Amino acid sequence: MSFYESWLLPRLIGCACGSRPVARQRARLVPLARGVVVDLGFGSGTNLPYYDADLVSRVIAVEPDRSMLDYRRDRRRQDIPVQDVVAGAEATGLPDACADTVVVTYALCTIPDAPAALVEARRLLKPGGKLLFCEHGRAPDAGVARWQARVEPVWKRLAGGCHLTRDPVALVQAAGFTCETLEQRYLAGTPRFAGWTSRGTAVPVAG
Ligand SMILES: C[S@@+](CC[C@H](N)C(=O)[O-])C[C@H]1O[C@@H](n2cnc3c(N)ncnc32)[C@H](O)[C@@H]1O
Image (cartoon, rainbow, N blue to C red; front, side, top):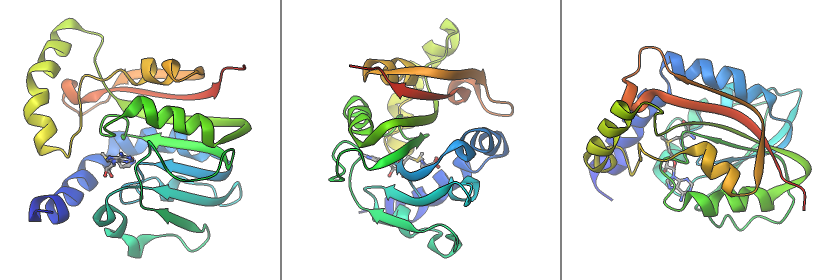
């Protein structure tokens, strides 16, 4: 792994994912998690401060990049156990129905096979469990979407494989979830090509 990938990239991602508008999205979503939580594409654990220790018994951190897991390990919480699983979200190796909540934030853009990761999320959820997601993606405005398509090839190389043109809500629905809540907006203080955000909760469609 290059110096860029192992040292600089975790820090750049940490800055982008720790911005104030993104933090506000996390603050609205992550406290909804309950019980055993699987956090897909955990990164360096930016969601951790937002979990409610009275509601969450354990977080299973699924992340294929060891340098992301190690970055800011010293800031892990004492009141919620975190289990590292070094694996892709597409095939976690975790047992069926082990999670009350699956959380995926700003990772469906990067996970190479996002549809497979969401099928895995379905497999991991216990009956009655929920998927919580917050993702950037393809903007509804044609002009912005055109820019996203233009910028994406370069962006992907600089931002660790992050896509700008994926539609997270369509991905969630195609994997057999139905959205219980959904809020979409351009994030304040964020360039529009990277700022169209979808935050929601979803449950598996019965059957
Ligand atoms: C932009 S970061 C987001 C991290 C974190 N979820 C957050 O909200 O800040 C995207 C993360 O997806 C991870 N990733 C890449 N490929 C993955 C895969 N196949 N499965 C799970 N995560 C993956 C990257 O290593 C990176 O940590």
